[in-house]
Image 1: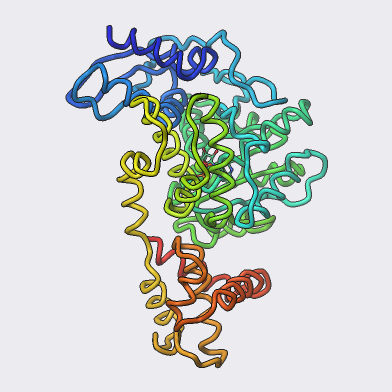
Image 2: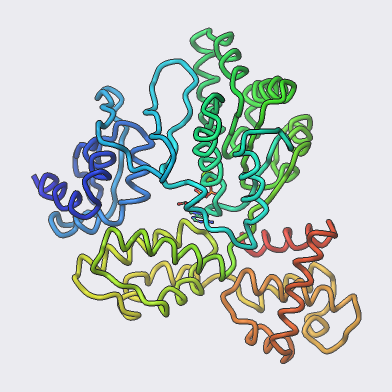
Amino acid sequence: AAWRVLRNEICDTIGENNYKTWIEPLNFARQSNDVAVFHAPTAFVGNYVRQHYGDMILAKLHAHVAGIRRLDFEVAANIAAQPSQAPVQQPAAAPAPKPAAQNDGLISAPLDPRFTFDNFVVGKPNELAHAAARRVAEGSVVTFNPLFLYGGVGLGKTHLMHAISWELRRNRPDLNVLYLSAEQFMYRFVQALRDRRMMDFKELFRSVDVLMVDDVQFIAGKDSTQDEFFHTFNALIEQQKQIVISADRAPDEIKDLENRIRSRLQSGLVVDLHPTDYELRLGILQSKVEAQRVLYPTLELDDGIVEFLAHRISTNVRVLEGALTRLFAFASLVGKPITMELTQDCLADVLRASQQKISIEEIQRRVAEHYNIRISDLIGPKRLRAFARPRQVAMFLCKQLTSRSLPEIGRRFGGRDHTTVMHGVKRIEELRMQDAQIDEDVELLRRALES
Ligand code: ADP
Ligand code: MG
């Protein structure tokens, strides 16, 4: 009964189209302890709702039912999925996504309507990946094959792949574009084996014009799936069909991957998405604030708070988005304006988590260790190359991985000026393009610090 009341409230909050697409197909199943369990028609719908509306639903549930702390979505396999009749919330010019069918055929995993190029904010850390994705999305010539995108969680790999799909559907509706996760690839492969329909499977995958496989690290160590992937991959490359792959790390860092596959993956263009920097986070936040303002027209968020969030929240864009969603939902529920105090209250856990993050000391320690020099030399006045380069690397990492300002970083490096820090950061940025060794050092250090 509470759910019925809530549904109306949710509809008011997110608008009828979103409501019909995402919330209406849900059924409240039960409450077990502090978990509210819903039946969702597909895992995608469940995940989408969790990701986009989870905090809001939870907050609203709180007001009606005591003690709910979590939402869970079960896929109701035997409740027939009812594709919603409502128009799906659409990106400006892209066609509506096809509902995912359960039967055979060339079925792409559902595409998130918000993951378009229009909604992708470009900055230094992702400009190369973005440009490469744009090129593939033109669908005219195959310039690099495969395109291999990699980067940490929440940096926009899936977003870019969906954007390519949307754009190709528009530019080249004649092409068969197949997007799926490596996990789904494996699932379909296993199913084909079980149903003795390998011929169909092979034929299906070899008939695509553009194949995009997300999170390919997933198939590492899964031998027969890897094999099949390799064959599919080769058949498509031979026919000059475009392939786009993503992973959470570079091909040569994926363990348990056969060498022949590794080298295949490296044979095209390999681009990484770097962790977001302050400017990019600011840009992303500003664009997401716009979206929230549509949902909550009465709420304002002033620039000071946006800057505060860009400084204080980690590089994962998903975390950033989640924080913003929660902030707006919270303010609207308690009926208060968004002040700094309310922000700190509402996001205490997120802010705390990112504060425990990497410190300047830790970066200095690791870098000194890595280059086998003393910390006193790293931050001291000596200008020898053997110290100066590691110093610049350390400054670069401080800029990337902490929210400290340039002047502060300068102070912590023996009282240097902020322009010195800026110069150091720039230098490393340039060197990373030219010098594979530096690039590798930086990557190794970054990963070690982030783990
Ligand atoms: P990944 O697949 O790399 O883990 P996603 O593509 O799922 O990351 O991105 C996580 C979330 O952050 C998504 O909601 C996505 O829209 C958003 N996001 C990431 N990068 C950007 C960007 N540059 N501009 C706008 N939104 C972004
Ligand atoms: Mg992803």
